[in-house]
Amino acid sequence: MNTAYVIVTVLAAAWVGYSAAAVFLRAGWVVEALTDYGVPRSWWPWLGAAKAAGAAGLLVGLFVPVVGILATIGLFLYFAGAVITVMRARSYAHIPFPLLYLAPVLVAAALGYAA
Image 1 (cartoon, rainbow, N blue to C red):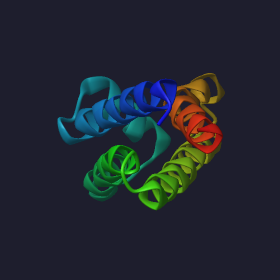
Image 2 (image 1 turned 30 degrees about the horizontal axis):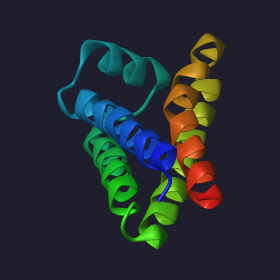
Image 3 (image 1 turned 180 degrees about the vertical axis):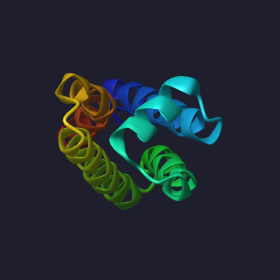
């Protein structure tokens, strides 16, 4: 297994896990953004759970590659939905934020494919 792949995957999982924790703990910057984007409060726990499951899936994917692939697909869809939500709210300056979480996930997937 490629060392770069393992390091980037662990960092990507930590980054997405941090994002999940921010949703669960109702961090001010998350609550404000979700409210501004019009995301219903009832969805917040599910969004946090989806991110947490994706982060866990990335780590499991180090040992069971198909799980990592599925986690990558799920996180890609999640953050693509986040970009669409931000665009629908016309908060165009915030589009890079979900992409910052998606980028390391995609880099980890590319390194995994190359390994």
